[in-house]
Image 1: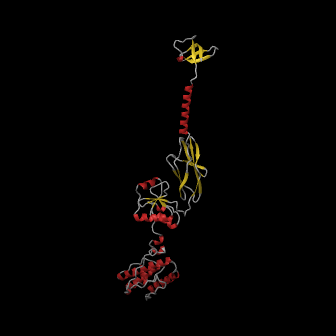
Image 2: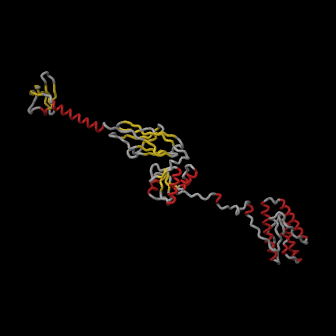
Image 3: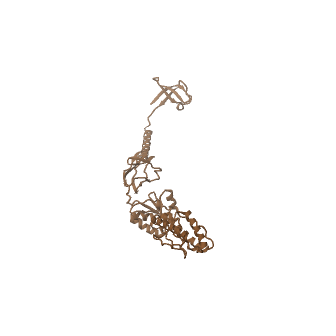
Length: 400
C-alpha cells in the first residue's frame, strides 16, 4: 500500500506528517530521506510481513514453555513431621528437609495444641527441635506451618503423650569415659530398664554418664546443658523403678556420706545430764579414808568420835546425809555430793601428810560458818590431845 504524506513541522526527533484528509501523524525523523523540510511530500509503502509474525510467535511460545518447565512444574511440599523421642517432660520432633521447589522461604513455625509455639531458626539446615517443660503423662498435638512465596503449606498433626514417672523408655544415654567393668554393667542396667545408649551427644540425648569430666563429648554435653551424671544414677532408677532427679548424682556433686544409723555412736561418751558432764569423776579414796556414800543409795555410817566438838559435827553431817537421801532422785544434788566426796578424800590424804598443821577446809556445807568454827576447835583439841589429824572426822559424810 502506497501512501503520500505532506511533511509539516520537522524536529530533531519527530516529524509531523499530514494525510490527504488532514490527519496528523508523528513519524520518526531518522526514517525520512535526507533534506526533507516543511511542505515536502513523501511516499510511504506499507505492507504486512507474515514471515516475521510467524517467527515472532514461535519464539514467544518457546519462552512460555521454558518458564512453565522451570517454575510451574514443581511446587513446595508440606513438611513431614514425626516424633523422635519423648520423656516425662520433653518431646523431640523431627521432619524431612524442606522442599521449596523454585519458591522462596518466608518462615517455618511450630504449633502446639493449635497455638503458635514459635518459629524454627534456620529451617533450611535444622530438621529437629526439642520442646521442654511439658507436664508428666499429658497429651500434646504438634504441627508445622510452612510459608513460601508460592503459598502456605501445613504438615500433618502429630499427637504425643509424655511418659509416666515409671516409664524409663524415653531415657537416652550417651556415655563418656568409663572403666570397662562399669561400662558393661551400665549397658546391662540400661537394657533392663528399657532405655537406650546412643553414640555421640545428640539432640535427643537426655543424660550423659561418665566418671571423668573431660573429652570432646563431655564438652558438647556441657554446651547443650545435658545433665552429666555418674553411673549410680542408672542403678538408682532401676532400684526405685522410676526416674529420679539428678541433683545428687551430678559428676561434680558432693558425695553423700554413710547413713546415720551406720555412723559411730557417741551415746557411750556423751552423758545424758549436762550437769553431770561438768562434774569431774571422783578419785578413789585413800587407804585410811572411809568410803564415800554420795554415789550409793545407802552410805555406810562413819565411826563416832569421842570428842564433843567432833561428835557435833558428825551429827550435823548425818543430818545432811539424811536430807540428801530424801532428794536422791535429783541429778543436781547427786552431782554436788559426788564433788564433796572427792574433795573429802583429797583433804583426808592431805591431813595424813601434814601432821604439824592442818589447813582450813575450802568447802562449806549448808551451815558452813558453824562447821568452820567447830573444825578450828577440833584442830586445837587435836593439837592438845595428840590425836592424829588423819581421822578426817570433820570431812566425813558432809552433805548439803
